[in-house]
Length: 401
Image (cartoon, rainbow, N blue to C red):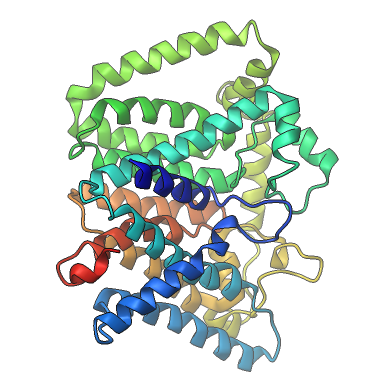
């Protein structure tokens, strides 16, 4: 029980990418060296045996570094921010997940089903804490005097203004929250049929769906996709899902007319449904479409990029936020292929019971989200990939502490 609690704390700070105001990097960076030490210990204990799937994963990352150097040689300029923010972050995440999954496997009763439940619960707690902070400005100020808002470009006044208009998800606000929410909802739906915790998962799905929209409206994509899976394959859960959802909506309806903060959060979440043309969502959609008009005008940029990820003012290169074009401008189509290949490879090699529809839905999440913004789901997928490798027959007893 104690090890599960400790594991959950480590999982929570990793999933939400929690940072303090005292350091510019996430808290989990401090513990990643433990994973590196354990990895090297296993490597030595197993007489330098390296799991083939882990070796393939690092080979894919090596390709990205090669493409970066080719781009640098062609452009004779550039920055390393794409490599640092995507692949260095991924490598550190690899060793951290190696550590926490070792911790998880100490309890021999723990299995993939419980890991999924812990992961989904961590996302729910993130959203619930964010909701509580939104409801109380004093708690909001106290919390973010210790932890970073992760809105790097915003002043304190701007953050307060955001908090007046919408819920700020702790750790990963705005689109970052949408990435986590969509992945979590679809993962839940994909695993639901094989879980022992069906009733808990239904309740978690409802709360993550409602609070997720309040954190980021793009969450609605994950809601729709996960609903397709749930209602197609698991019709027996339809009534239970509907009952929980109606109960929560009745509560929100009552609270809407009695609490101004609830009214603000509901208006932000759903006003675009009734008046899209005059909503903030319409402005975001128009801005996104305009960004899609910004494309490379050189063949070398299309192939290996300009080797820039940010501009001199610290904003996105070329002023674009679209995931695909950001990667193309950084490392070209070759870089984009490697970026997607890394995520698809890890996802495909997670050992869990799944249907073709479920696997396709998780792939669609990766593909769709990058149409809106840069979406690196690798750290999240690594949690389940690492469990699959450390718990595999090929890895042997070395997989446990």
